Image (tube, rainbow, N blue to C red):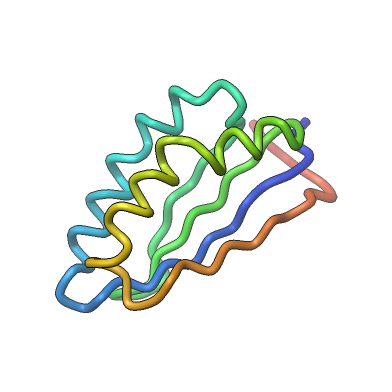
Length: 99
């Protein structure tokens, strides 16, 4: 069972929202390739507000993801596409229901 996770809030510059959305959609394949990532969700809360929620079985998986390819993509596009630095929240999961 997943024990830990991350929750990110990303605010795009208004003129870059479509590009941020495309980058998050494209990151799905990177998440699928990560052995330690159990679940990965990218979502949109508003015209310029996006988020990521992902889970891991253990701290090792979370740490590997934090230093992984998706983080590299966000670091690369952030300065030109984000209105501010993403808010990153480490989460400890209390209960999980998956199919």
